[in-house]
Figure 1: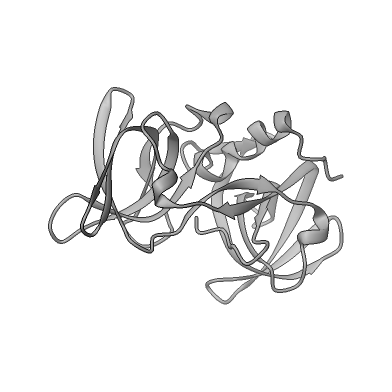
Figure 2: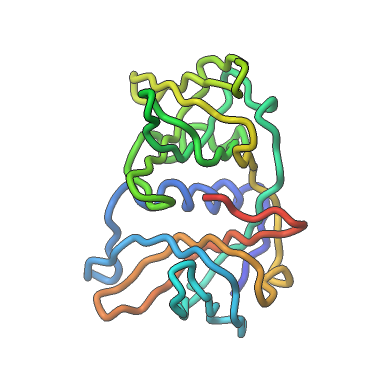
Length: 209
């Protein structure tokens, strides 16, 4: 059954996409693998979402009781301010340091959610960093931010054109064929996939995570 995405539920829901890969999950006593499913909707019957994944496979994803749906809204790199809590997927650059692949600006209520820097599967060798912006400096090629997490600091360059988004409400009516989705999910030992959260692209903005 779908729950309405109220502010309180939003706080619980949007933690999942970036925190899901941090620790292993356990389902009914059996170890379940945390995975991210990215692709386009091929079917939706209210209980199961069928997705054509970016790898070209078809995944049937069971929607757990109380599942929630959200979307993303376009933001700008100029919206990033010191004190903001962000999730930045990045890759090492040839010149050293990291370059952003995408940026998610969390709502203020989610500051601290999934804090840390860990491996991510957006691209090979990519990293996800959930952290607080210490400073943001504009330069000729974009913006460089210094973020802090668990007493550590990391500088990440955000080139011009990098997707920047924040979370926004959505409903099950947005789960239309060909809509782009990002789904933090659990894969059981028998291969069954389930989720409590779906992030769907709306209004021409797709989840870049």
